[in-house]
Length: 344
Image (cartoon, rainbow, N blue to C red; front, side, top):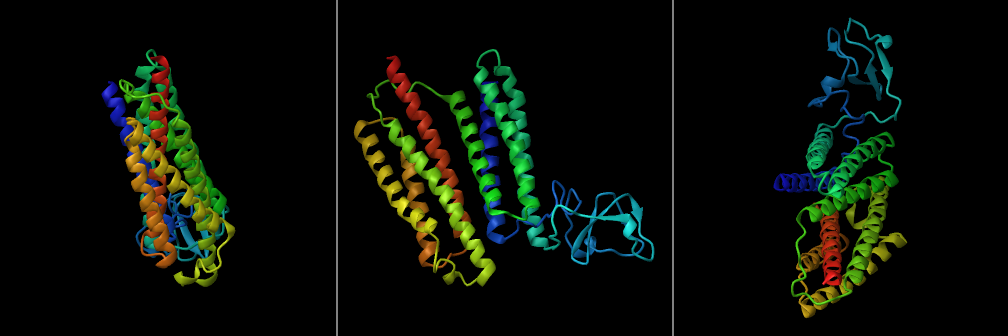
């Protein structure tokens, strides 16, 4: 049973990361309003593939809740009915959450795939929570963590709805991203509790976990600053269009702090890499941390000096979220190593 729960936790983690990847693609392609309602998409569980589906026509059947676009507004069917020769406003009610009413098949299906992956991740975490009940008598922490993940996913779904209702308000997009990182952290904490072993057989005592925690905090700050920079870029796109060479011509202070702090992140983790190797600590994930930081810096340089090459923005975001996860797990291993040393 323990092996099955571990596999479920890993599957849930992979699916959550796939949702993060999909979310990055949604933002890169401007597909955030591809489905202007929630949880359905234009009133359908499987969205339309052509605009004709969303247009009124005589002798056409509609189910209650389905949506059409009329005079650049969304109208919702109030009951099951078939249209007559003329449009009857009494059969429809306006969608009042917002006034966005645009259909783009690519944006719709990109956003729909994002939501579909979110639903699959939610089902995986629910299965994990149900399976974790088996642990209640042995290790209550695992059961509690698993159900906290389920509640976190439910809250994340609600946040997703508020993002749509606000027509992609930047602050809510940022909160949506940070909540995803919190879910990643909870799943990694759960996986660590399921799989932790004695790492301290020959390891020397060390207080390096404090520096690893500091490194994680700096990465978290960098992610927040990065979302602020991305918000600025989105505003530039609205104002000047897709002239990529002008997006960061006159950036805000967040950009300069974000760029300068990356040097501190690189220096700190370079010192951590050297210290862990010198003390021969069994914290090998520092190698992945170093690689991910170098890739992050490379994509950042590419965006600034090469005018945002294709997919550089979502790759930068996804790498940051993976870096956060690896660093968080490294913190857990370092704390476990430190606690094991104290018990010797």
